[in-house]
Length: 107
Length: 43
Image 1 (cartoon, rainbow over the protein chains, first blue to last red):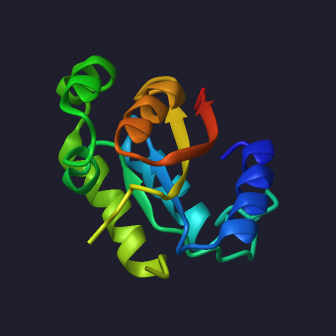
Image 2 (cartoon, rainbow over the protein chains, first blue to last red):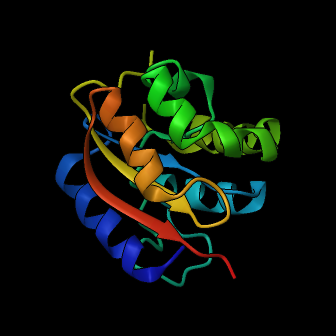
């Protein structure tokens, strides 16, 4: 993940904590989804950025996960996400993020 | 049970997937307060 983004997420994660703050991803491939989810829960596994060794434990979801989708206004979802939902591998993406969440999120 | 209403949210988009602003619009419609929006590029 981009180092500047890591710095910003670290700041917000420490300010609000996992009870108040949620991270929602729009990743296009399962590997990058897993990496991003791991970075905001267990810390940066590449040890390159500010989140190296910082387990924020934030709840993390992919925008395509049913738990998130069902809470979004269907009209907005249709306009903003539906087209990408048709071309992305929903099962692989949501599975990768769910795995990291279940292993490392504090909630 | 996951709740978005009243939560702070980070929209971490992907240029080749769902971009940050699209995620942010969705989260706002669910009642979350979006505190950071970005779109990463994995090239």
